[in-house]
Structure formats: structure tokens, C-alpha cells
Image (tube, rainbow, N blue to C red; front, side, top):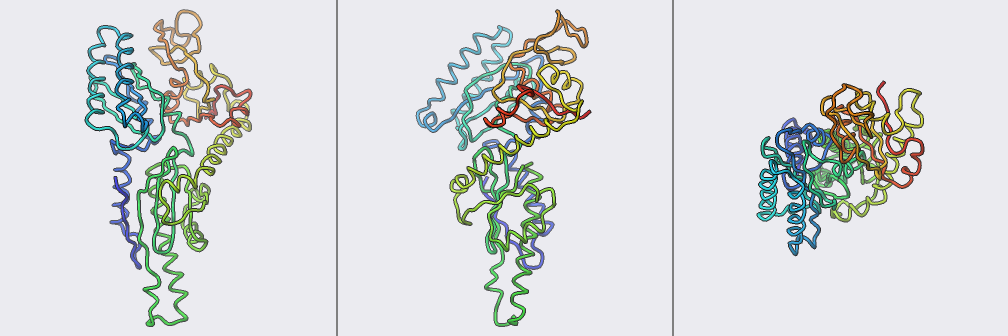
Length: 407
């Protein structure tokens, strides 16, 4: 979807009609099939998918420039499909083969124009077909199970991983979404040409007053736009590059909650998305490190009884719905078990059955972290992966999995 151009008037900079248009186009962008900006709501929707009768197939495939140019993705997908079918039972293999053939056909017909990875989540019986393109290269994988395999998506999305970027000036402003290092322009705003307004008909002693008022009106409209976009896209930070007078007027009209998450950087108003991405590199790394450090500080300062430490204690609190934030060392991976009845998770269940509901139907879980993250999202809890070496080193007694508790 191309960026939307918005023109601001003098007397009514942001009309109700223009607000509705911005809201509509922002929401539409979230549903673009070729390039979807992941959000917490998308992840919560994926978590809710479940199929007991027919498996959900999760396909992760890297689409690097080399694979695009040479068709190198085809033998990789074929090899993954072959190995998957060899491990599948005869009852499910026909359905799996049809869905994998359908995915290959879709890629043959049209490779996604953007992104370095494509993800398919499909289920024939439930009519599920999700295609997500990401700007980072993820490991090739096919997973077959009753729920979609989303850990790679969780690992590449986190607080601070999607931000709104605003390049502001008196006569032209631009809004971008910065997501996983990819910068995409979404709005261009035409402001007032103040020089054309300051004619001889305007008394000299009124010209500064008029110029200041026009600046304030435009800054207010830009702040309102930023608030709408941030709310709909669930962005973490607002990254602003602007002259001092415009920046001050813009900040004055932002809600306090957004002001607390404003970060400044330097970029030319005509900069390309690539140049903006380069300018944001160091700031992006700092924000991620600071956000992870803030989560660790919450753990360290939590009152007795408001934190779970260790894998099984955290899993028990997830089952009870007490977890407000799940904190995991990104390097941690381990198999486990899950009760088919009450969904309780265990590193290793004691005895032959579930100690919670006494059911004897225990299922093996390939990735305990993935299952725990899904349970956390089910209960609207935050999921924070510690990915920076400094924060991983600081985890200490909280490693490899802990949680902040609601009660």
C-alpha cells in the first residue's frame, strides 16, 4: 500500500472526515496480505487458533535475494515437505500434502514483493489461510500440530520492535512505521506555505503572531495524527526528527503517555526510508536494551509473592492465570509435557498423569517456551524475551524463565 498524502487547512487542520480516512487506511494497512505489520492483536488471534481433527501447518521459509533470483526456495520447501510427510501418519498425510502443494502454488504464482521471510499458517478443515511476510530472515521450518507454531514470530516481535517515526517541518511532514529494522512510509502531510500567507496585506506587527499560530495549528493536527496511528498500530515509541520550534509545538499537544515514549533523532525531511533506517540503528539498539533492562528492574524490585522464579513455578502461575509478564532468556529451549484436558504445562510431569486434574492424557511439547508464550498471550500477559547480551547476563536467578505476577 502506497503512502497516503494528507493536506492540512488553515482553519480546520484535521477535520472529522480526515480523521476517519486516516483511521480507515491505518487499519487497512494492518491487513495487507503481502506485508503484514505484526501486532499484539495479530499474535493473540494466532494463539486462539486450534484444530484437533485436522492439523495446523506452520511453514517458515527464508526469501533472501539469492533465493528469489535463483528460485532457491523451491528445493528447500520440497525437502522440508518430504521430511514432514515421512514423519506424518497416513491419516493426516493426504491433507498435509494438499496444503503444502497449495503453498508452493501460491509462491510460484507470486512471491511476496517485500520481506526476507514468508510464513504460512494453514488448516484445510477450518479454512485457515494466513500469510505473513517479515523483513528479517527466519530459519526454514515446517511444523504440524493442533496449534500454529508462533515462537519465531514471538521472538521477532517485542516491545520496542515497532515504532512510529515522524519527520516534521512547517510545509511538509512524513510518518513512517519502523518495524524490525524495516522503515516504511505511510503518510505524507502537506502543511501551509507560510511565506505565501505573509503578504503585504498582513501588517508587519501581526506577521510573527500569524506564523506562530499556523505552526501551532499544524503541530496540533500532526500530534492528533500521531496519536491515532500509534493507537491503531500499537507502536511502542514515537521517534521524532524536527526543527526545535516545530518539535516543541508538536510535543505540547501529545498526550502524556506518548510524551514519555518520545525519542529524538536527526534526519533530513527528504531522507529515504533506507537512510532513516540507518539513522535509527544505534537508537533502535538502545531502546531494545533499555526496554529489556526495565523489565529486569521490575523483576528485581517486585515485592515478595509478586514474582515467579524458575521454569516450573512460572508454568504453574501461567496455569492459574496469575502472570502479568512472562520473561524468558531468548536462548532457552526445552521440550516438555502438556495435559490434554486442563492444558497445564510441565517440564516433566510427576508420575503417569496430570497432577492437577488427574487426567492420564499427557502430550509431548516440542518447545516449552512456545507453549508458555501461547498461554501467556491467551491471558493477555506480556511476553518479554531477553535478547541483548547485557540483559541475558543480568538475568541471574531469574534465568531462564520467570514472571511478574498479577497477584
